Length: 472
Image 1 (cartoon, rainbow, N blue to C red):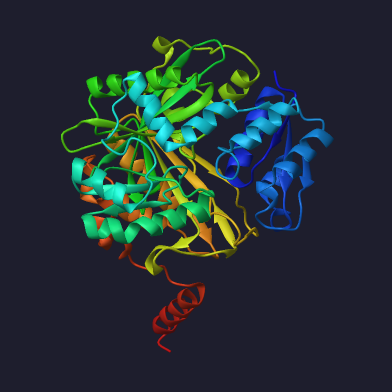
Image 2 (image 1 turned 30 degrees about the vertical axis):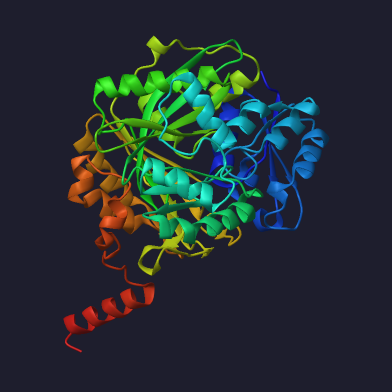
């Protein structure tokens, strides 16, 4: 087993990894920039080391992270999600310095990070993909030719993209010509590559992903699926496991496809195979995420498998502890990404000091967070400050529990997406269990919820009520 782990990340995922280390008897080592000096992961880790004054460069500096790992005597590195988690150079650099990389091999990360190479691998494995260009596009003329063959609408995508960036929907040839250089420019800025490709657009699909685990001994299993269809601008908002939109035959088929994909590329550790489901219930491979997902807790809630602990065991060379037949599911789970954003103001970030914080509890409620009363959310990073995960045996019971837990949760001093999530849970379309990626865009009324009174407004209201009561 790994003895000492460097956690090359921050925030709630760093806290999550620290907890897993504590249960396994692994020494946890955190890193932090000046902006994160008072962060919760720094307080909870066994050891913590500064990695520089810059807000972003520290967590993105392979040299600094490896230097800390070696100086602290670590024998392994876990990248979490985001930052360098899917960077093959980081994985290779760790391996070159005899540091165990908690994730798939660098060659697999590189291959699956290249969307064109990933499509080719899936075609060879017999996994269905959407029609599209055979490789990267040389120019707009080539793009127009492919689009004419497969038909509009089409999607232009950055070959090395991810996180919803470097993607444009093109309804016709004019839109394709207009967006081509824009996507190429976005790909260059965000991913350091000009390569883009094209594929047939599945309009308002359902976004279904399958959690997989693979070891170094040729074994792979799936842990069922998650429904990530509730999105805004290609960014996931709510995740559900299992999907309320699949029947048992579809669920088994998708799981088998995901395992086939994992075995085809020699996948080791935890990963996710993402699919799009169109209006006629056909499935198409979208991408493979070669890391731990933000939404992994919902899978843990329905299966009882600690995915992070399994990651650490697999990285240490142990075989999978489970056969596929041993993986069962129970009930439904739902995760809400609690972001420090103002839903009423186009979701602008709302960074600042948290004056009060109350985490919800009770049966079937889990909170993964990195905030506390008095903590100041820095403006340098992603706006997600906590994840609320709820579980129940039945779908209707889950909706009621989620509503209660969201109302129990209190984050004061900054604006959050909690009221927005409450509006989603109360919406009839969501409650029906049948929705697609166009759900949020089709219902702008979701942001028209009543605003909370400020402390000053509340004080004035109380004073007015008291004055009226006493006849003043």
